[in-house]
Length: 471
Image 1 (cartoon, rainbow, N blue to C red):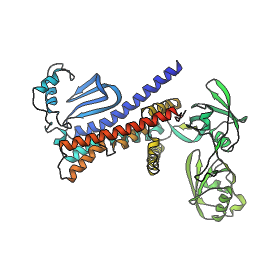
Image 2: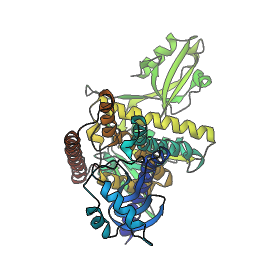
Image 3: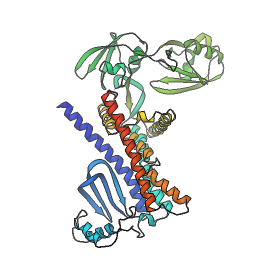
Image 4: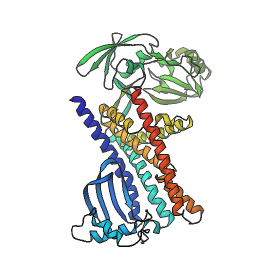
């Protein structure tokens, strides 16, 4: 029964997220169309048969439809043969209590005239090219704005992650040692090899220092406490050599620059750190000079810049260089509320990191590996629900920005495809594609979307069958 209610909560949460994304995206198209004086006949959440009609204002009906996996706005004039239907609809809806789904609409349409384009002044293609482009662009822009604003307001609402971590599992990565021994999201690690741990830093430090060595974890899950034995796997570089972590035990003379215990050296003046001896040598070489030191602190990259004291040899940092062992688990990060300025800083950084991550995937040709469909979103929703409201809100913002980027791809059917046809029209000095060319363009888009759908669903199925989804 508990599993049933978890699935219900997971499903409802995903449907709410998708509905918010659709409403924001379509509202962008809708509001700019209305500002440009373009008629909008339908604003629907979902596809297929109408479940119920929310209301009608002006020419626009607001509906909820059967399949809650998307939505649309029906902008008058975008279809090449809709003039009779629009005229019939206006005629039928002129009656008292007219039903927009009334069966007489198609019958009336048959007697109005041939299937021709809607060319009234409030039709889409009656407007200049720049207005049509704004209407199409407004959807992705509104999706991006929603994601950006949500990220920027998380600090003053749900709270944002701090640099501190808890001895609690936020995720057990697919294929990792943590997943192999059955760790799940929400598990609390009470002790490692009998040594109590009270923070994420202690937990990660003990795991990192145990590369290749069996360790015993004392785990609490709800009211149950049990033990698991695991062997942290050493991290290897591209040449299959062990990667060293140079942890700070005592900061020594660099405390004045902001170095603190548990920091991990990453770079000194742009040079990657590979050993403790190298760190000490670089610090000696730069004594009395301004240095830019990059460290990892609680999973975040921190830059320390300042003058290294001279002579530093009397107070070099105490270091703990060692191989890195991983269980491939991510600790829960402490959440706190902050002021508006800091909240916006977090939003700006998170959005920038999102695009950097996307650029990395494209550059390394790994975007297809990260792509996920409805199964992946369903699983991700389950993880977010278990983690709490901040993760659910963060997922909504991430999906909204992803929706904006995806819709701008120059693929027919998508918003980017419409913009591509407008660009072609502009190059041809106002000459639109012929009906046959538009039909071929549309069929090409359907084929591309179909191929993408198959590839993404294949990813989802492979992840599910091979248990490559996070726990």
